[in-house]
Length: 250
Image 1 (cartoon, rainbow, N blue to C red):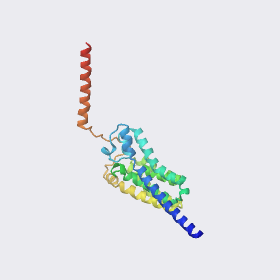
Image 2 (cartoon, rainbow, N blue to C red):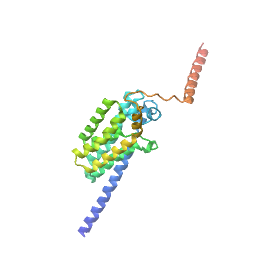
Image 3 (cartoon, rainbow, N blue to C red):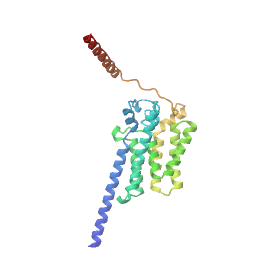
Image 4 (cartoon, rainbow, N blue to C red):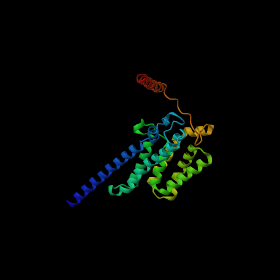
């Protein structure tokens, strides 16, 4: 009877661990689905990053708006949404029975959320900053090595896309060479392949000599004519109101 009770307890505990894992994956995906390029741009009154430049909702394209603060804020928030879910699993996962497998899937889910955000019709960015946040949470030295690779290539060639692809190619090798964590290595490899796939158009532009360099300002979309008419009408109404008030005062 004791063995049977212990077996039932172990089975129910394993089932609960699995439920907790699925909940963690879902939450990570939802956090990743927060497209901060769009959110920050709306809050700061900037044009939607999906309407100019590369039309990619990411920090590099926000930089093309000319607002450096918005670009830096987007970069940090996109990195945090990859870092925080994995860091929480590392901090509290042991008591819930989480291992490297859950951690790998949580990081990958946050990354997928950025690429295919449920809150933005599954039209997301390329995932560079979010992937960097995930790698920093997996292994700080891995994230640092990948970040140094990106910065070095970007500083040398001034192409964000080229730097991202090179970093995506080298990150799995860094993981396999220096860290004995096979499940995390698989997640890093999967993210690397998706990053390269998301940059295929940039690579084509790069080969054709049409790729934009870092820091180049993109042409902003023209304001909506109807919106401009509404604004002009509002100005005219206010001016007319002021004129009538002055006439009455005289």
